Image (tube, rainbow, N blue to C red; front, top):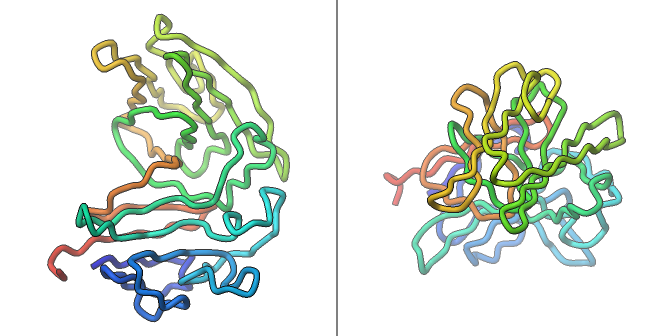
Length: 233
């Protein structure tokens, strides 16, 4: 059994089992739970639950994938619950990214870097880094949200430049980030790692996330948590 609660859910506590959300709008019992900004699209019910956010109809698109924000689903083969970001991001058009409508989850200490991952260091720092990988070259876009505009500064590093310090006094400078993080290239496993044992790291990725404990998420400035209760099985 999964339970999810927070302001995004109108301060309700929702319960999800192997069939889906109890009292779902879709009522499909297919193991999928879709959380969106609207209930209907093109005459069909697309959301199991409508989130407590404004659908601003932004320029990210007006298709179904701009209306569904995230999903929780049960994989019957693996016997596990997963979280998945659904809302599509066009990483080539960074000015179109609406950071208020994408979901980050909190991670600590160490993160394996994958392509098109977005990271924010704490909720108070108004900078995001978008990381893209190509042949062990790491390209970092430092994104600053200013009003409705996204300012971008690009940096490119190779594995010989590892480690890369990130922070106010680091090689990659982020104003307001007092404590340094490290981007390190692991020569044994041939991938990049972000290490930061002291900061609060918020991560967005397209990868599915297994829910086997309590995980803290945020969308905009709204915090919510998803909890796996193994005792309810």
